[in-house]
Length: 321
Image (cartoon, rainbow, N blue to C red; front, side):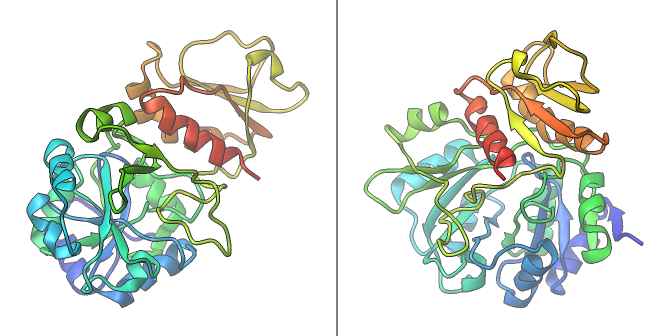
């Protein structure tokens, strides 16, 4: 038996206020939400996902005016970035307010916060009238969900309600930018590109984000070396000629290609090789390949610019074993 799938925002808001868990759509991926002030509800997120307690959770707010509900101070640059990119796929890491429980931030004194750009997410926030702590609505480390059916397949009846808003528009998680040091630091590439951010913030440091592990807490979600992974093994090729023979192989590519040998399935993310379209299709394509009874999924790297930077990050972590 699976949980209720609905478009009833009022019902979803009531579930959140009562301490329940609601999966809801954003423009990036589906989130698994709890009242950010309710430590018991947030603890249930970790249990349902199988998520390590040292992995911080992003808090979602309706708009810039909600920042003071979550963070202790709002620097000028944070406000400028929020006014430029919110609602949208940008998470800002700032000093947290004491009212945000330590379980949300994994004991860190900072909190990642963003305003999602999806009409159902916005309605849910305003009807519930509380910030929503929400990682992706999947089992920890597995493929991110970009459709309601992805959530139901992974989490089933372990949550209270799924708010169905159709496929996610952007399709990869938010960019995470830390603003607590002397210079902005990119902790995770995502739906807002580094190039776009630097037009507002100036030069941005790019963090080494593969150090997180069992004894090294991450400073942002998505920093574990293995993450976003299908159950089927995935490898990243330098060129198509490296496609292995003698196995049931699926291939995921940016644009149309001619494989040098037959493969079981090919997922072309964009007939125009457009990175925006490719990002929107990325996780859904991996879900389909993962359900195709393959021995191996092969991928070609993306151009390392714009959204390609975020897609390459997801591929690298999905391939880590």
